[in-house]
Length: 240
Figure 1 (tube, one colour):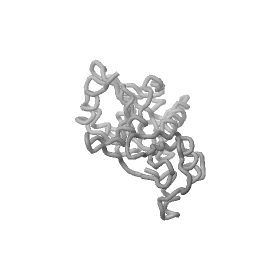
Figure 2 (cartoon, helix red, strand yellow):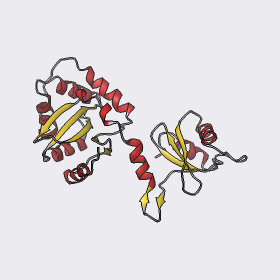
Figure 3 (cartoon, one colour):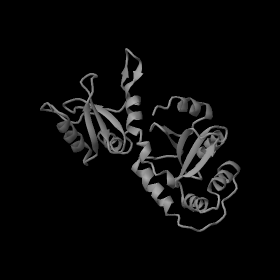
């Protein structure tokens, strides 16, 4: 964490101390102090948490750090509840990264229904992503699932070209599977492929910085390659 906003500044300063002097009594003052240090309006929210007098600071980049009421330091790390052994930071990050599943424009994705299609998995994938190809092999093993694949070309211009050709294919699902599973290059095709651009804008809005990224029907986000067995377990715990 912090690599997008704060780490360069900390490296330059070589210290964690941010401010000294008057006690800062509320979230608003903490936000102002952190943004003053960063030098930009980078803070999305500040919340006092019931651990050690800390304040949770959520940055607009999606990163999460902690500070005290005086903003004398920043903590880039995890808070663990020693009584329950629960990773408080991980749980909070999962909450922050979740999406409103019902708001996803599923008509912009390639749809595949297997078996009864009762379980739903949404993926954002770049056709040139090696981990997406590994994920594709895992997904091909799954039954009774509906897959929505958002073409999300962020790696190279060739990714965009492949995405447009796949979207414009007569059978999009086949073109995607032929490429992702068997390395059969999608044939050149023309159509209104503006949906690819909309997917990129959507992914940026959702802070999707890497592929593959998966979402389940309860809005949970799973980042990166997920083996089929692990995904099956996650699907079994989906709550609606």
